[in-house]
Length: 551
Image (cartoon, rainbow, N blue to C red; front, side, top):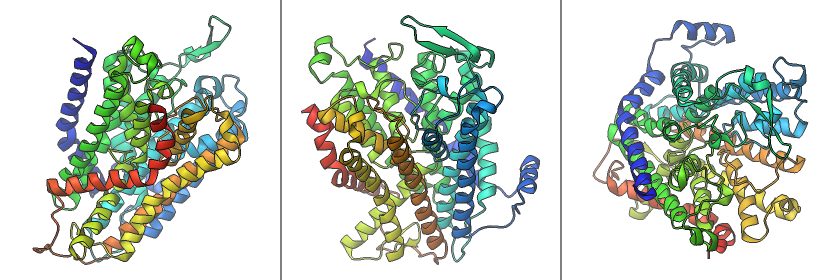
């Protein structure tokens, strides 16, 4: 069997598995966020934090609760890292430097999980388990909660209530992320991933004098970082490390975990708005763009565009030989299409066009399928923009699932779309203007790509790295931390404001002039609008970076 054939079968098996779980898992998620009953442990948590689970919140209260929770999480995590040397299981590590602790705290609370450090040589076990891994759960749950709040805005009418943030956060964490991550951790341990504490203190000296701390609580952290589409990991080389991703079938499992929740959430949308076909349309948009991305990334890497790759017959540099070129490219596409950051190959070593494809994946806005929750609400924003554009074309008031898209709604949607491009392009320009691009290991178009990738990954809360760029300096940690913070919470505020505006509306019955938003025509329109908006925004930067290098 050729590498290409094996890669195609690998992708097809993923597609079949995701299609098979879409309905049952989506229905389970729907019951989690819509069910009226609270479990005993959930009621105990509500009493502990002083929350009335029966009291619903307006969009403003929902947003303030979310922001307050996230702010406390950042402060706690920052303090945890700064006091690391005084904590149990610190492994003798020094406190994390202030700018590094700030960057990491923001990174994990925003579901970015960008790592400027090597996890196995910087963070002790307690910080990894009780700090970073906890945020792998909670930051992912926050994203799903925001998506559910936006869907409630579409589903409800003549009300200002969007649910209760604390109830959503608790249910999603306890009923979805925690149980599935436990099962996934067990499967990864069967596959060979390490799960212990004693190995964490064993230091192995390698040829050349470098040292590696082996062991550690890897399997459980790997499971939740993949399920919650989080990056980061105990080892800096992440899912390329055999302790984290030992075999080709664990590689398949990790990609499946990256995609399963984002691809199932459209089912929740369809069920909540009472039009299952609308959910299928959103899932179809995700699938079309995702399959195109995976196919193109594989093609660019398999044809080995470039002098050296063509000479050896493949783009092998930076690839883990256990996964070959195709499965590495599929993982890379999946991780940049979701807000993950987990990697099993060296993105900086990809061909110019292959690396450019990974950039485009993030520039799409992390919507195909995107991060857990963030992908759904991002794509719904693009659907709103598409409906508005279509309404202008035919001279009718745009409507989407029974809600009118007026001036307030389109302003919020437009601002949402503009936030991350502004951060990416302004951050990249600032790096060059201040001379901080000098930390890139390359010059010319590839050096630009390295800087552009860093800001694209941070601003879109992806967390993967192009590498080839030293980002452990105060300037980079501060700048990327600000991009992660603003790139996460400004869009969330705009999404919740849009949800509140939609929820207050009276439903508009469909008429002969209403654009059907569940048919292939609408799917194609949203795909076209998404690609065109990204092209208009980022084409000049891409032309100076990966396109110039590829040509």
